[in-house]
Length: 203
Image (cartoon, rainbow, N blue to C red):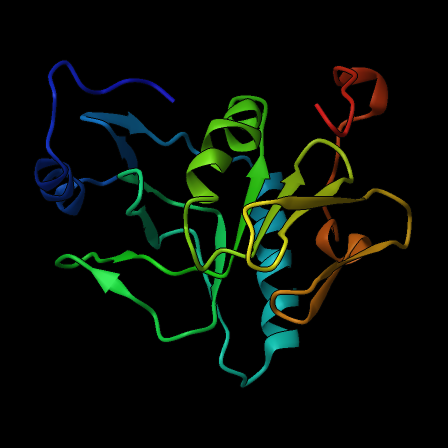
């Protein structure tokens, strides 16, 4: 992300600017950060995830929300746009249009080279402050790998599970769904192993 701000900007100013902007930006602690465009692979993974979750959730109370919906972490003041969210209670929205969502149950981020460190670390530290958030899912865009962080009920402790095996699946207990690895990466052309930098799934 590139820094757009040269002075401290209030949340109200950010929201006014964002309502008029052609592109999306993130806001935290007086600074605005541009959100980079996504790759074709990123977009296709997002579509596959949305189709899978929508078909499993059906007509139930949980809704799959796309990347254009902003979320506000009210405890820290972060405004951002997750790649995908699921909200199961009545959506709590604040502000004038476009409004910000307060109560996602599940958040998905699709990783890229430029965002992976942030999504795994500092961004997760913000997200875990959302009281309603029960699961945080990280999906790689350069290899077949899904990571799911699940909050232990009634605590701020998180369990971690990985899925990287052919034909594997990972359970999303918070919404009673599963993600099949083959379905998430359907039609996605990934780089050859020798062309990407080595990385541990836990890095």
